[in-house]
Image (cartoon, rainbow, N blue to C red; front, side, top):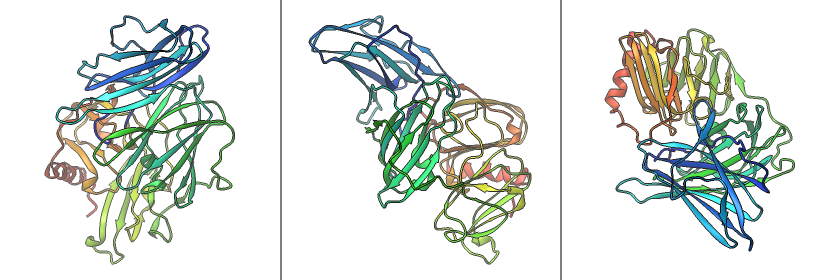
Length: 447
């Protein structure tokens, strides 16, 4: 979890570890440390004594999980917890660790027991923030009201509890009646994804409405959070359903594609997020005019050898220009989730995990943490140009939209989860200095 609009959570996979019980419920979010504390609330709604057992899984790397024993106050074990009839039990993690651990829980319990978790973030100088996660069985279809308008952000975490990979489709109907359809990258066995809806599906940017997640090959679990522009968050409803999808446009349209040329935005191509697997020498421009002057270039980039490039074309752009080196642009990502980060531009949450990464870089290594893919300097949260060879570290926050790295950085390997406390932001001057060094010294400045 991050402390800003951060968009969130990490929902982890399901793996029962106890014997037979009347019901198995999933709590999709448990956090501890780094300012976070979780309270698990168990309630026996019957008049008879009942038992509940909790097991926990913690996020490791690339969607994998392992057994976890969070530090709870006042109890030595979370197995075979006895609840009298008509009673409630509160289990609180210590929340004292310096670094954040996050995961999920399984509740195996007698009939009549219900459960939920409260996760609390304490930020000195500000009021505490609380969110909740209801314990529920997984489902084949889940409805999520969303709002991506007026600076609001809806973020979700999705978990595949099955022993095989699973593809989850998503339908949207906005408040104005527009229907769009898509799917998530294949989620591995016992895997999870966490992302902002508007980052993963740019078609709903600035819109609100209803999202429908569904699977034809198994069941899954989901948690939804809503963030406002101040960074405050609350749990948003997610309705667990069964049966066939209810949002449909009569078929899933093929991905929009286009190749070499100059295209009028809103006429030849719609605004949106586009992806390509470029060859060497890819060059693109977002344009405010067609006179061929430098002043008409809103943003541009020259890409030498990325596995994937991403660009956000805005509705206010007049045109978009792309050369043959870029190949074909698609409205859908070109690659699925990546266990390590190689040369290219990647979606944080959907294609790469947040966290701290290490690489053995060569001279000329350049990387960027991104808030969008418009190609402007204001898109860059932080960056660095490394002139000498040697080991390098970078922490990618869960609230980052993307991450870019060139071939001189080599391969980035995740070494730890992200810290809840982010480092001080770079100044605009520092960002521009690294950006210019990359363009000028590597010969990628197309001006």
